[in-house]
Image: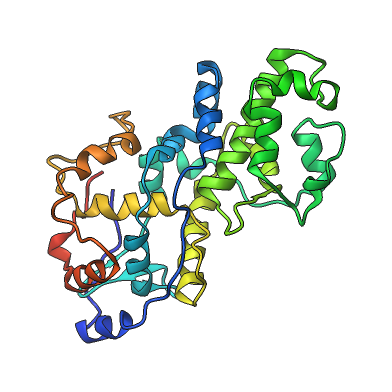
Length: 309
């Protein structure tokens, strides 16, 4: 696993960058409803979700570090899509995200999934909801609470009855429940919004994922992280990207791996095992935004693990 490196930048420029870092918020915790939904899912459905999202769902178990993400923002160069530190550059790559999530198999040969337009009626169709609901047409957004009320609770099958297109067949409802969870998960954990609403366009993304086996959402996730970094560098105060993946990616480069990790041969859940590796760093890492800024200013290429793939 390689990240970009280039010894270009003088230290005095780095000092200038961190004088006034932007203030912003992040997706700071997993919504309890989403976690309850996941815990209540049948193991078979979790396995089906894994086929499309890999180990990505395990980010629900993480504690986001807002201080680290905020401290990183000033070092972002949106022209080149890299973090520029004192004597090196670093940027997250598709191969790294693929390795973390277990979705890296034949990555470069897969069809790229891109955002697509979905109106309220199409969303209802893809979520197998017969009767329209006012909330579904609220500027193209829907709440987690609404989706959970229909598909998150087991009672949703009986409570919504003929309002859903499942022929009153429980296994069919369970399949639709799986799809709705994927929409909810992506909308809250991977493509979060400040208002905590979920874009109905994500039903179109999930629809493609379910129908096209050789497709990948990773470029969309990475592009969204890049976009969020750039927006925050320009002054936006909410990180509309997967901050947990960004956090994990950066910290893995600070960890001294005892041996090279080959994701292709070791089908390891790198996300779930990440906290165990971080236990060795917990006493060495800064606490608070100011401490992180000071740490990052002094960070050099020799402090980074460059190749752990």
